[in-house]
Image (tube, rainbow, N blue to C red):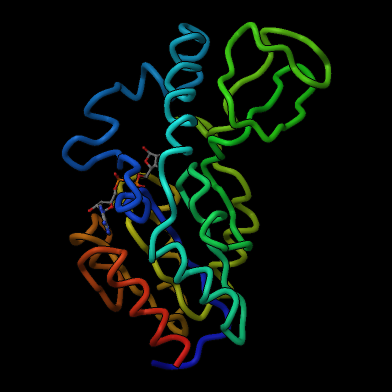
Amino acid sequence: MASYKNIVVLTGAGISAESGVSTFRDAGGLWEKHRIEDVATPEAFARDPDGVQNFYNMRRAQLFSVEPHAAHHALARLERDLDGQVTIVTQNVDNLHERGGSQNIIHMHGELAKVRCLSCYQIFDWLEDCDQQTPCPLCSRAPALRPHIVWFGEMPFEMDRIERLLYECDLFISVGTSGNVYPAAGFVSAVRSRAVAHTIEVNLEPSEGASFFAEKRHGLAGDLVPLLVDELLS
Ligand code: APR
């Protein structure tokens, strides 16, 4: 394995599956139990704010019953021990990368453990329930707080920084994403347009974008990511 100096790791729900966090499009996934248009769009929040707050309260509460697993810990080891830069760009809104020890993380779809005020725009760390009666800790207004989550139809966070990272990286690894949702699904093509970077897909099964990856490793993230990190650090 060549020695890489600037690695970008895109992660999706599949890296959290072995921790017990539901994915979205697998059998039994979240979008089998809830309609996106009912819980994950600005229109849904305008129409049924209590229903949307409850959906995220349920998912936020789940954070207390799941733990990071070997794949999260391996990525933290890669960031710590690589003689170079490792950036995790995650579509996941759970806090398992942080709890697994990673520090250089971009949550492009937001975070369950944060809420933001629609009145004063402040963002707050938040681990308990939140509803329309919950006052903003800063400006005291209610209703004012919403999940700090990127809903369908909203712009993902830190896209300029992500695009620059994709342009500069020499290795792009994708772990546990189905390649169904843009812009994340298009990241591999942005990297492939530069012949100098290598691309690896680690996923339970070939994703929608599998053909764009120079290398594919299919199986459980908990098995494959630690092995890949061992190779990258050897
Ligand atoms: N190890 C590796 N890959 C796995 C595992 C596992 N243990 N379990 C599932 N997978 C793979 C599945 O094969 C699937 O390809 O993870 C992928 C999960 O795909 P999705 O459920 O579509 O999740 P994701 O790709 O993260 O969704 C992207 O869509 O709904 C929106 O905002 C939401 O961030 C999410 C985005």
